[in-house]
Image (cartoon, rainbow, N blue to C red):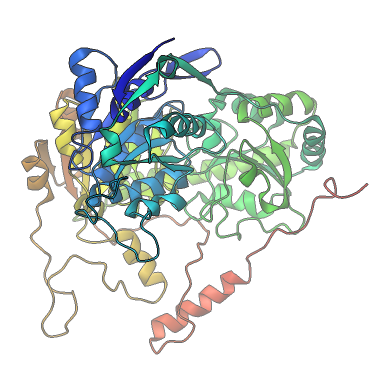
Length: 634
């Protein structure tokens, strides 16, 4: 092949347009589009290249104008997660604050292990005009820029100081984006002068390239160890994490659970891995889980974790599993996760691992009495959920009633999106997932502001679905700008704004920790006390959403809310439904715990009492250092 003369940015765009991923014989574009906000640093580089590609047809890389750099990364995460990490969007931002605005998004992507490609504009490679506007000057080294902050937040980071470095950087980026065990944010820093610099490129760089995503098989000896532990279980429990969904292994999980009778609990990322009404389903596990799953977790003698990273919410800060002889079998594609809790390590794809376990465990099944017990517990719990959904609370409705009305009307071809505040806890505890992709809660980073931006990316990935963004007033005020993007692109979202005039989740946590909800209410400052305890602020979030281009429906009752949801579904436009709820309405208990340290010394009696409770729970934490006998020497 010959050479073609292009700028670095033009070569980058043409390269990205020709990358594909493949799994199980299904091939798709790896980078199907690019979000961007332009400023000095990328407007004449990547921006010009995207324009030229669109105008000349030289590369197919659709461009989407975002309104907030953090928001466009969130949207990209929502997109990739909806596509089971087989596709990733690119995000381009200008030098300085434009690029560093993506740092929170990078942290969210890497924490959640979702692939996104960040094209961060950087300082001049030539340094002729230094220091330039927004350049970080450090006396210790002139090659450090603000973009170096991306290094610990990225699974892959490179800076292209010269055009010749671009091919290696982009091939490395694609490798990590398609590595199911190592993926996350990938950052390529592009000095603004290099973006516009021309170079003669080998045409082979732009040939279509397919990145094959494997399904690793379990190693036979590890499989034998795992089977031996599982066969010994009398009260086993499965914890299904997000890896089950990303691996598209839900059918294999269902068959395994039905064959063995082992009950299945789920994590925030794993909800939907087994549907709520399946005989083996016992709901969410951990700090915000169901009392059923948590009761089984306390007594479990064997825990099979599938595609879970065992976060502190899943393990109730390592207090969930109280059986002194509990053993863990960890089926995961990531070596980091498979070694947790001193478990038997089954390093494999979730689908192939479950297929192997089902085959090797033929003839094993839990005792029927164990099955009857967890079904009885779950039936009793469902009555509690029904009551929470139809509480009849007043004069303002309870948040659980809002979630219940949505859960009962959403349908299977829809996705509910949430990330922060009190709703993730209520959702994991109470939501009845009726379909694999119906539930989308970002809870590895629990980032306020993800809800609307993430919903935008989800709708872009699955335009045939209704996408509901559930957002509290705290998160809405953090970031609502991508409503404008949805409106401008004619991408319909249904945004449910739940307003309770404060931070409900942190307020409740604060109270439980003896801090009396300090700094968690949206109120005027009371001049008599100096505290934010005056009248409610006259904030009108519905009017704000309307000013950003959304249609708005204001409701006060749950019946009106149900009617508004029906109207929003019938509409072809982005619609916000605004409802005010009671921050202090009751919520069922998960009968679990989460480790948030309480002041060891305090003059406040509320804090002193909270510290006593804290120390009691701390005594129940377990390090899980006991090795399985199958792992030790013969």
